[in-house]
Image 1: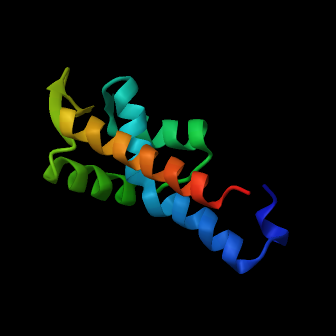
Image 2: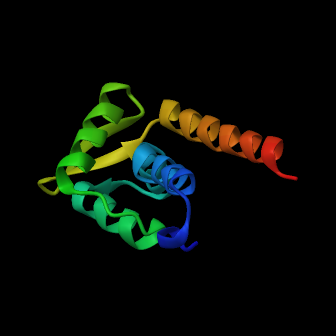
Image 3: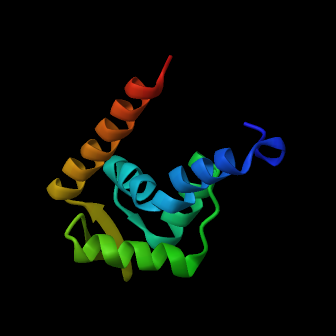
Length: 107
C-alpha cells in the first residue's frame, strides 16, 4: 500500500477507512479484552498502524460510551473500557457492511 504515489481518491479512501472510522478499531480491540485509554491508543498504532492523538481517542471513547457501545469500569484506580452487547452488535454490523461493499466491488 504505497499511498504517497497514489491518487487523491485512493488516499481519501484510506483516510476514511482508517482515521475516519477509529470507532471500529476501538470496538475490535475491546472485543478482545477490556483496556484503559492509553492501552487502546497504543494498540491502535501497533495493531492497525494508525496514529491517533490522545484527545481524539478520548473523544471517540466518550461518544462510544454515550451511545452505550462501551462502558467505563474503574479498576485499580484506572478507567477501563469494556465493549457492551450493543457494541458487539455494532462491530458485527460494521464488519458485515464492509464485507458487503467488498462483495459488490470485487471483480
